[in-house]
Amino acid sequence: MNPDLKGHIRKLIRIPVPSRKTVLLIIVVAILAVGLNALVATLLERYQNFHIPSTGNIYALGFDAYGGNITTHDGTQYIDWGTTYVGSETNCSIYLRSKSNIDTTMNLTTANWTYVNTQGQNVASPTTSSINLTWDYDNSTIKPNQEIYVTFTLSVPYDADFVEYLINNKVTQFNFDIHISPSER
Image (cartoon, rainbow, N blue to C red; front, side, top):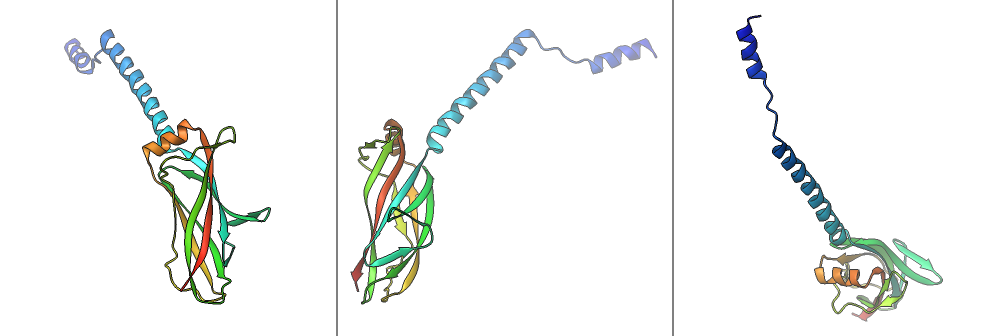
């Protein structure tokens, strides 16, 4: 092969060798990127995926509550909402049968919100709670002995103050009472 041709090929194929400063800069940037990624992932895990188990005791005055997601333990009916995540909603459904002898509608209220810390102790409730319980009952008239199927939605929207309350008080679970009562139609 022609020596001039070999020289031209070497010049064309020549791989540039980076300087030590360039290699050091690449290593520093890579380490910083990995460190920043780990920090952001830790912060997001702390706030975005914060989760706590919860239950809701059911007290149905004038109605039989049964089936669906109801669990009974020592005579108390409750819904085990499972692990709830900040920024999420959880649905559970039950059957309700009117025990009234007149047409009625139902009211839903909650009470006795209790937050429990890592030591199993109750902690003071937050001044404002983001947690909300709603249902799909449309306020229609319920006849005596009529059965209906209702779905409850437990919403735990993202609220920075509420998340800080949960973290600062080391809350690991919460419980509350669900009251279903009749109102005459």
